[in-house]
Length: 394
Image 1 (tube, helix red, strand yellow):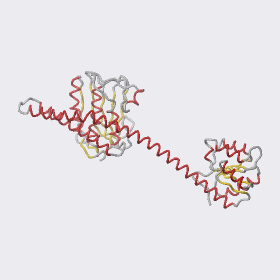
Image 2: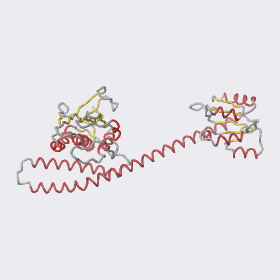
Image 3: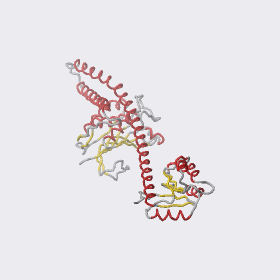
Image 4: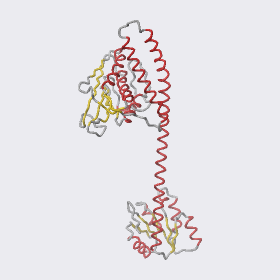
C-alpha cells in the first residue's frame, strides 16, 4: 500500500508521547509520504503556520489542550477546516468516539492499532479528500463557464438586436427603392447611373447577407459564430470595399491610396462575408476619424515572422491587411476601449458621422473566429494603423 500522491502526501502526527510518534513515523515512512510530528496542540499550531498537511493523525489526551479542542479550533479556520483529522487514541468509550466525530474528525482509531488498518483508513480519507477537491474545482469551473456563457448570451442578444433592428428593415426599404429607381431610369441613358446602381445593389446584398448571418446566430450555441471558411481571392473584396468608401472619403477630400500589385491573386481561407465586414469597419473608421484633406494608405500583403511588428499569431506566414490613417491618434490610456463593445474613445468623427461603438468589437470577434486577429498601433498626433492578420495556407 502506498500513500504517495503527486505531489507526495504530507501527514502531521500529533501526540504528547515521543514513543508513539516514533512508532507512527516508522509505520508511515515505508509508505513514501512526508511525515511531520508535534508533541502538543500548541506545537501543532506552530507547524501549521508553515505547512498545510494533507491529513492529521491526532491524539486526544494531551496537556493544556486536548485533541478534541484542537480539532474544533482547526475546523473554524478557513484554511485548515478541510484537512481530514483522524483521532488516534486509547480512549475507546462510545461517548469519546461520538465526541470525536462531533469535534470534526473523519475517523476514530483506538490504540493499539494495526498498521494495515491505519494505512487503509488514511488511504481512504486521502482519496476522499482528493475527490472532494476535484469536485470543488469542477464546480468552480462550471460556475465560471456558466457566468461566461451568460455574458456571451447577453452579448449575442444585444448584437443581434442592434443588427436586425437597425439594418434589416432599412435594407429592405433600400432594396425596394433601388428596384424602383432602376425601373424608372432604365430608358433614360443617364451616364454613370448603371454603375452606381450596381454598386448600391452590391452593398445592399452584402449587408443583407451579414444580417442573415447574425440572425442565424440564434440557432447556434451561445456566443459562437458559424463561420464558413473557404478559399477566397481577397483583393477583389478589398477593392470593392475601398470603392464603396471612396464616396465618403471624397466628400472630405480624403485620398485613399492602395496598391495590391503582386497580390492580386492572394488567397486566404476566410468567410467572405465576415472578411468584408472587417475590412469595411477598419476602412470606414479611417475615413470617419480622419480630418479633411488627409490620406489613408491601405496594403494587402503576405508577411513572415520577424517583421517590424510583434507577431500576433504563431505561424510561418500570415496575410496582413493594413489601414493607416492621418487622424488624431488614440491615447494609450484609451487603447483598452477600442475593441470593447459600445465603448468610445474621446475622438469623434470629423464630419459628424454616426458611431455605435460596436463595429470594431464585432470585427475583432469575427477575425478570431477565422483564427486571426485584429490589432492596432496608435499614438496622439501620429494617426492609427489597424492590422487584420489571418493565417496563410499554401
